[in-house]
Image: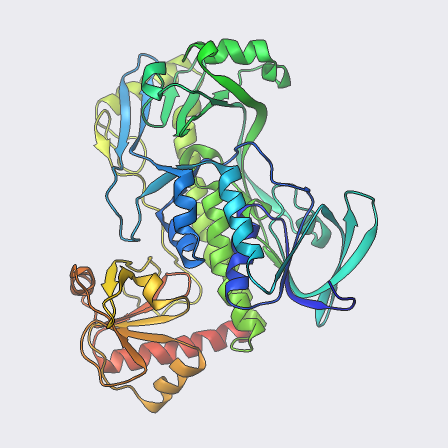
Amino acid sequence: MASGEIFDVVVVGFGPTGATLANLLGRDGHRTLVVERAPQIYTLPRAVHFDHEVMRIFQSIRLAERILPHTGPVEGYEFKNAEGKLLMGFELGETLTSQGWQADYMFHQPSLEAVLREGATAHRKVEVQLGQELVRLEQELDGVTLGLRSAEDGRQTSVRARFVVGCDGASSATREQVGLETEDLEFDEPWLVVDATTSRPVEELGFPRVPLQHCDPRRPTTAIPVMGPYLRWEFMLLPGEGPEMQEPARVRALVSEWVDPDAIEIIRSAVYRFHALIGRRWRAGRVLIAGDAAHQMPPFLGQGMCAGIRDADNLAWKLGMVLDGRAGEGLLDSYQRERGPHVRSVIGIAVEMGRIICTQDPEIAKARDAQMLSGAGGVAGASGGTPASMPALPGLSEGLLEPAPRHPLTGELALQATVRDGQGREGLLDDLAGPGFTLLWREATSLSDRARATLERLHVRQITFGSTVDPKVLRLDDPTHAYGAWLDRHGADAVLVRPDHAVFGVASGARDVDFLVNALASGLAAEADAG
């Protein structure tokens, strides 16, 4: 690193959120430095689940196919009571969703992190410094100075950046340096997490086939067949229990109620407090926070890491537009306005699930069981003892979206299906179209000069599934008719999609498309003024 060099962005933390952000920034050509306190990847699993939206983000950084071998599909999710009766079940299966991937994946975190890190360091403009701890952060009008300390010899250095993003976890030094406070959402439970491996098939062990919440008031427990040889338990601690529950004999006694302990190798046991917290502010000038630095949620929905990666995807293109001069710094304030309500809603669903699982009162548990077994439902309308759909995650409700009144599709994730280009290449839309804003036309028609200029200035790609004579419009075939059906279902002639795959707005007719494109320009200008 050259003396006096200033980076576009310094990312503090090289876990999944920071590594995804570095990949996104590097892909788009932004000079990025990643600093990470630990000298190497943590070798034991922590997060174990991500969903189809996250896989689409991995696809956007060209790493999905390299990550797939380290994953296993999730076929379902069950809640059972102390007697083993099914209270609630979700069937997921192996069919592809509207995002072009399976709904949910289990994965091995050290392997995932290795792929993400290799991807980041392959970008010419991304530099990584491991074993460097953030100890000082000072903001100026035109940038930020970071003081770093080497874990190896204690030597201190400083670097400069236009922006800093703290992806440095629940105890974020970045958050502390700029004084960003968190709000307690009043969920705090102690649990023992146990990870193990086995050389035997899960079925032979008698271990659950799908992730299971064992809602037993004597000891609420989660049992997860992660993937390959990996198993996980999460045991709720009872009053009076603490760190001593990590002792090998106690761990062995707990897992022996599930499997033959001689048939597994325990690789980690740790006591955690499952929290529900959210940052009151995610930005202080040129410093922003993401992932666990900005929010923490109990793991019952498996969305903690997913939320951080969504943060990275939302923030990367906004930083890029500001760095490239296509938007003002006020656009960065839309990051929390969009992600904050989404995260708060997901935390609420996770806490609701947790409250179903975590009761230790036998009478309350008995009433819960009776209600759910009667079909009265538990979470998101799931009916007792029968398969249901997983709770749907919300779309965006605020921020850079078309003006009200909005189409119901606005803020939701845009469809990704198989398409074919003029050379006969077939693949998912994002692979053929590439990253950035996209205007998806049923059939491209003429726009006003102002709208055409806006599309060019904001680097909005135009794609049509019909005819076009405009060389700036990419024509793609819709071999499965997925896009035709999607547009029909929503009464749309065109859909304007943001770089994070959220729908900015929907148009019917050329005049509406013209309005929609100009609304994007106006929205970006308004966000800049608001900042």
